[in-house]
Figure (cartoon, rainbow, N blue to C red):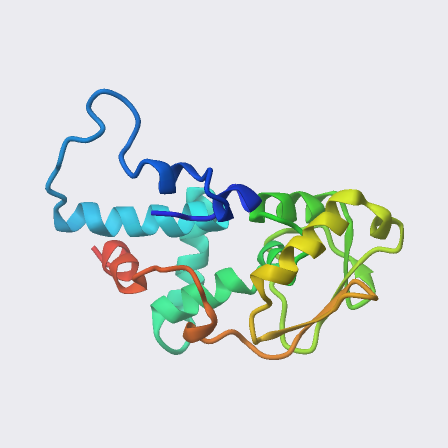
Amino acid sequence: MKLFLKGERCFKEKCAIERRNVPPGQHGARRRKVQNYGLQLREKQKLRRAYGLLEGQFRRTFDLAARSRGVTGENLLRLLEQRLDNVAFSLGFATSRNQARQLVRHGHLDVDGRRVNIPSFQVRPGMVISVREKSRKNERIREAMEFAQGRGIPPWLELDIESFTGKVVERPTREDIRIPIQEQLIVELYSR
């Protein structure tokens, strides 16, 4: 499964998944039958790795989603999408979620005019995320902004390229989340 973890490289023809869709090594092409638990675990690991979370962080996010009103799987995806590091990636301030996480940790981003360096910070509708004045000259951020033009911005976010700011217009819906995931399998896994 192509998770787009490598930034630009996954969008080009040199992507390893495009060239060879089997695991590396002598026994990579062997077929295995995956059971129900294996499918559930694979979906959880796919989502966890796509957002770059550790197991404990992911479990706490799932518990919070389970306690919230509504469908647990959609709540989980919404909470993951509303993390500051993911919003920075979606706005195009970084080419990958790992790079966006590093931007947040190093204090390059402001939320509503205040410096925030916690990647798991939950953004809400109406919040404005901007690149700090000193960081706007950063070559990596400029390259990422150019690269993001072709990737597109989710409809629940607005971007002003000239001022390096983005605004959260509304909460993301299930249709806005681009990652091909079956969240029901994750809910079933944790419901055991």
